[in-house]
Image (tube, rainbow, N blue to C red):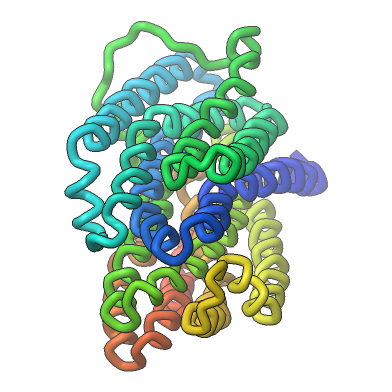
Length: 436
């Protein structure tokens, strides 16, 4: 594969996947907008307390989907077609097990869980309703992620993008329909979000029914080694998603103590814009995964660093544009979600946007580097990067800087942690160049 072909493949896969991920991020952003208009600050707070669980569900689906699809691409690149069906069948088994656990939590433990996440009596009812619906739709969210990853790696990125965007746009339309003309409240927002993967799966289904796919379910023995291979490659994707949820939980707790429910509502604006921004970087990372894995499996290692350079350049350019938009648009962005025209919410959120998103370029590089290592069958550095940015650095940084600087310290924790992890990530990348 020549370098110009690498660049063309990068543009094709990355652009399609970024577009799809941006559409996918509208799941929660549309809920945030319509909930803020219909239910005000209390609805926004309830939604923000439930979002981390969505991150866990989505992350679990991506863990299995990205892990399985990476193994699928490497196996095809190596010409090991017999392994492909076993990899897919094992991934389906894992999806069923984890989705079943989420479903049972939705039936029996949604109330205690929303309490654990910080809901008081004012927002308990709304929070429980939203959370329970998300958990009951977990099997569909996870199945959708699994199919999107495998179909994208099966040389159909256009179809994956179309499914993601169609599902997401349907969520926006249904959000409005359920919450305003039909007056279904917070349940309507959650139900619209739950229906989005159903619509996405319906777009993907003809690809499977017409047997265009190169992966199929087959009766096979579930092998522990295959399970571990999928999970090992997919865990960084899980941690990347889950870390967003964990950061939201920690920040919610800290901000509740510093600024109360209005502070959490303000953070809801920052967190939901963050989901969209992170979706851009995740789109680039997931976009390069199929071409990295296929080149690695085929032994064309000379193309790997070129593909990474294209991705790093895209992260730098997009980060500059994103931060300029957020810096100069912080007040109007906040105003969109501030339906009650709260001066406190406006001030806290606008300040938070300007500080928090100084870290977006570092987050983008960390996400791309993590997927780079996973895609080339080197999961250990990817695990380290994901754990550092999700737990080991981010959480201590949040507590330390909030103790020093109050709510400004909370906003500064994200860029400080991502910058530190980015230095470590680049050191790992430079060290690995001789072995990959």
